[in-house]
Length: 246
Image 1 (cartoon, rainbow, N blue to C red):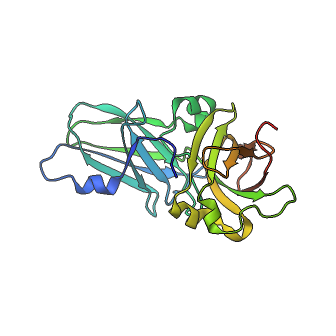
Image 2: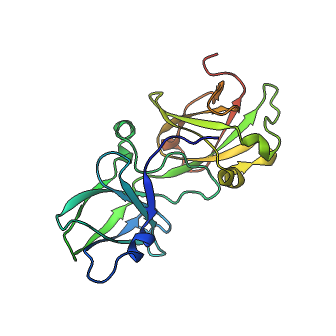
Image 3: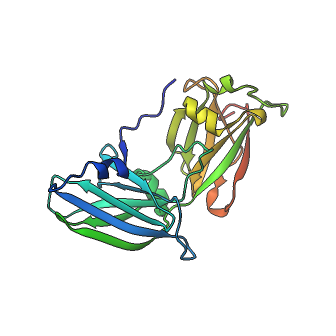
């Protein structure tokens, strides 16, 4: 079983911070993430990466109980430069999240909420406190229920999910993610007794398709696009076994 191709290197801030030793060149970024009411967001995910291809080094951390984060890492250059910072809502632990920062340029062109914030990284031994930053992207949880044409549960045991692939398309019909599920994702996100899987997606307009035979298809789709800009709670969608385009 394969996964979608993505060649980013995702490293927790804490690992990089441990690597900093006395006398090493370093840079430090701190800040606090607030919601729309000005309250600190606990567990917000903060991702930082250089502008450019998603294959560059990406690091992330989570905010603490006061909504604050701190990133300290060694750097090979003392020249100030820019990074792109994303602050997104906590991702549900019981959901499969196929779309996470950094978001590609085509996706950002469709949904400006995914643009992130450019921040200036200062030279050696300087610390930049970015102050209070707004939560940029909200994630919603979708329960995707799989049914046969008679309305009965489609997958009745956990092993049946091993060959399932999920495809996510944006509002223009472009495939953003297409991948199978890992064992951990099956164990955490699948509701076996309901023949359903919980999927976490950022605010925006999406369509969800599934294939029961990995990427080979045929693919089955929900009857309508999901407009997650209008939902503040979890959403339920049902997919029946009608091939896409028929």
